[in-house]
Image (tube, rainbow, N blue to C red; front, side):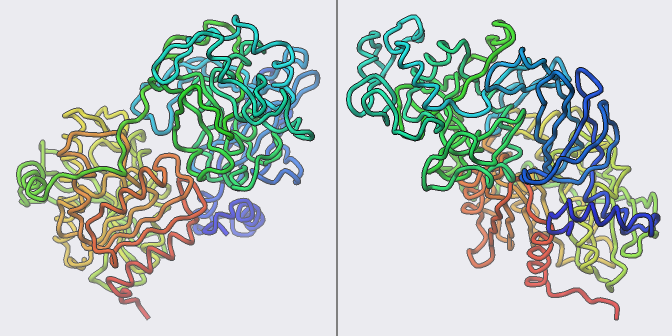
Length: 639
């Protein structure tokens, strides 16, 4: 059940089993995999807290007690949350995703203080900062709590704006009209905002109104200027890129997108889908695209994707000319507590990402060869290996904590080597490279949790090496992010990581119980993103698995950019990706990496799943083990 991402069923079964086998190590391992400890807090305190599994709206809410709730055991996976107390509007939320501990916070308001049709986006941290998927190079900004429309503005609501003379009131249209680079007067601009019969109104309307029976459908076919005028008329604002992204939280896309309207068939009534995000907002994915206040040069951002677009558009930023009135263009509004909450950093122009990886042109082989020789080569001298600890308690593997000399600065590389107990040496071996969470954690002491993803490798009869790379865990050196940039500091880190990979191969080759010609690299997320450089400069790796990775859309110096190294990769490569990945979107990150890999077509494979930044564990195990069996053969197991 856990391997198939059936976390709630596995959680229920594990709790039933615990009284009978409370000390069983396999049960403990599975409980770590399928459960999380939840904290739920609210203002005012004393509210009744509940949760249920995301997408199961027909099921009853499960009680957790009164807030504050601390350390409650809940199943892993995306959950919906609710808190309620007499006299206040019910608080709702979604989160935090499959990998994080739930820390939910609600600020509850008396009914008469809640704007009609809006939900609260709240944080317990007054200095809350937000970043934007696809624009990770931007500095995070302070974002005070705010209200956002539960769903898109409907035809019914927009009709009131039209009937009250919204198109005849210049004071509502404060932004300068510019079309195709030329300024327009108010009257000239209004001539562009006509319905199909020449009356003021959205492009899809006729005779100043919408199709009968579509009162509750999102208004569509409106320009950015019309959306901004409506928001001002309603006493609200269009959301900035930051406000929209915080409420949408594209990290949840693996669950949100399948529940949303990307049907390719037709628009649906506002709120009709089950695609719920933060605060209880609905339809932020699919249905209509939603205009944002934020400018991208001469264009304006419009996010979320439309009902007739590819599903990955929920995760990709998009921008259109502000006069655009496409049939999928709609919007929703926000309401701020104070005018100053819309600060200059929030309303500044944000250039549209300029690096189009679909048209990337890597440098030539002689240039890469020179970089290999000048930057990435090192002396394969004395490793000075030290065995620091041995743990033989697991029935499936023996763990050795070792360290060996790095190729720079007199440093040492700690590493954990797991040797299978069900196989005979020499062992096939997989070397792991973790995701970016390793940059923010300062200790690798809890190795059972850190390596849980890889336990299947030992059970398949292979060894697994988990080095502690520069900047990760206890080797933290001040690096704050995995987002590449054009600095020499980032380049120097890429060089050190590549040398750590190489020295780890040195260590494996130094052991007589390792099959030297059967060393694989498995990168997870960030470790998959930067893998093409390592695979191009380290010839002793014979196989690679890139799990939920793709190119970073932010550039780095050419000599540290995996894009330039990808065509020099020749080993068999397996890529496993989620179609709704928010870090590495399908069309602009995953596919360009797979296309540029120099591995012969018959020896590289990419498999996609209806998921976000993870795939079902059983599927991952099946494909990775099959890949190793295909190129290495099955390991020699004890009878």
